[in-house]
Length: 108
Image (cartoon, rainbow, N blue to C red; front, side, top):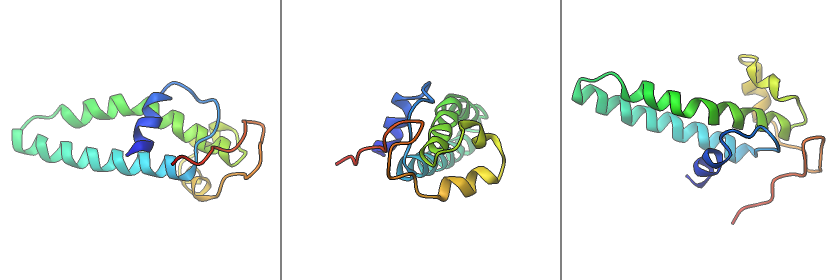
């Protein structure tokens, strides 16, 4: 969950790099949060919770996806190619500094 908050702190920044753990943990938490909100929506018979959450999470998700592409040495715009972006996101990041900065330091 710490990766989720890291991504939210960098919500408007496409500079730098995002590790595989940061990217996939953010996606997992988004998926789980959407499921919980959909369940709550169904119980309350409303239709705005998931849409509101998706709107809020859109830009942080876009930014972390672009930073993930930077981690493997690709342009951030590769993230906008459907399917191919998921394949690229599975690759390990560069172990050395690339054009987008040094690799992310391990967080405790």
